Length: 184
Figure 1 (cartoon, rainbow, N blue to C red):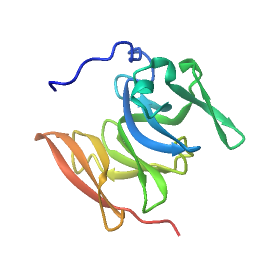
Figure 2 (figure 1 turned 90 degrees about the horizontal axis):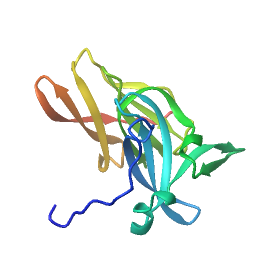
Figure 3 (figure 1 turned 90 degrees about the vertical axis):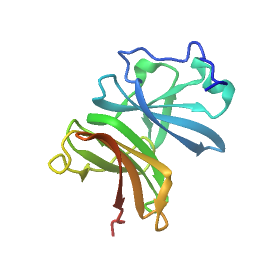
C-alpha cells in the first residue's frame, strides 16, 4: 500500500446502481475493456453494466466510462449517460462475482440473496442470463454471503470452479467448489 494514491473524481453516487461491482477483462471489437457488473448500495438490487477501455488513463477518467443501454438488434448500445443504463438482471442480487467459463463457453455469475448463494450463466456480458441455480442453500449454511469467483481457481479444464463464501457463524471466509455440467 505504500505506492497507492487516491484517484480523485472516479466515483459514483451512493444512490446509483454502481456501488458494489464485479469486474472482468473483455476483448471486444479488437479492443481491451474492463467490464463492471454493478448493484446498488445495500447490496440488493438488479444488475447493471458499465465498461471502460483497459488503459490506466481511461480508468482514471470518469468520462471514459460507458453504460449498457440495451440492444440495437443484437448489438449492444453503450451510452455515456449513467441514467440511461438498463438493468440486465432483475432481482435481489448481493455480493456478485462474474467470470468467463472456458468449460461452458459462457459467462457465469455468482451472488447471494440474503440467504442462499446462486449461480447463473449468460451468453454475453449483458445476457440473456439463465435461471438462477441454487449453489449453496441457506438451510445448510445460515448467514452465508459473498460467493466470490476467481478465474485462476478452476480445475478439470474449467469444469470445477472454486469460490470463497463468507459465513456469519462462525464468522469467517470458507473455500467451496462446484462442478459445472454442460447442457446437452
